[in-house]
Image 1 (cartoon, rainbow, N blue to C red):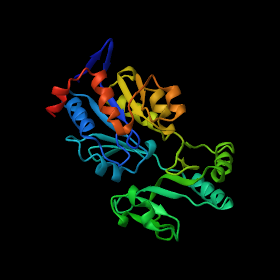
Image 2: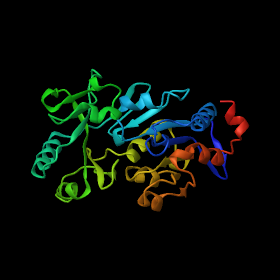
Image 3: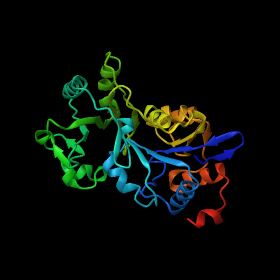
Image 4: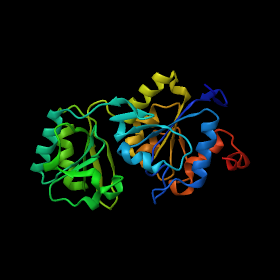
Length: 288
């Protein structure tokens, strides 16, 4: 496998978060980011997208790239390479029913990211919720169904709450401190005082998925670069040979990163950091 030499480190695998990292705030990949990734792909660098988004939507968002890359989606609950799934770790029924029941106790209802073998449904939302509120998370509103229409064959990948911070903290504490085995990242919401909390099967996280992928490819930890901005990226940042936090990253992520970018997701930060690390010239990048 080709590699890039920076000092004594040979980087072979690049794992990049989407929202707040590769995507700008308008949910687009900048021209520079596209060109840099295309350049690195041609040099033989293995590029993986590692995101909390549903895998169906990921494919749409990364379509500007001129190559196929592996996808770690739903924070590591599912991963695929060229449409072949190599990780599928759905939430067990006990955890699912417990979280939903406790949510009712606190007056909150989650939406569910699911794996549907027919690829017709991506998200299941509470009865009465409007589908358009989740339009940005799916390729089509037809990929959303309500609780009452959920099929038994659906495998739940993540249980998601997007709620007021104070309202959700007690529920979070009940689950995490109540002896329930699970992953439970907390991320910034899209509005002030709102946070996103996800509950996943134990072992479902970006870091473990990346380790699994790297093992399949024969790639060592020190040969991996990870780039992210949110708290659900902390484990993957810590587990890489070089973990990079965006300028717009959370304080916790920056504290765990090897390198903090001077650039945000709106400044083509991914592309600029990689140009420096891999010693790419603008002339070289512009050819791609």
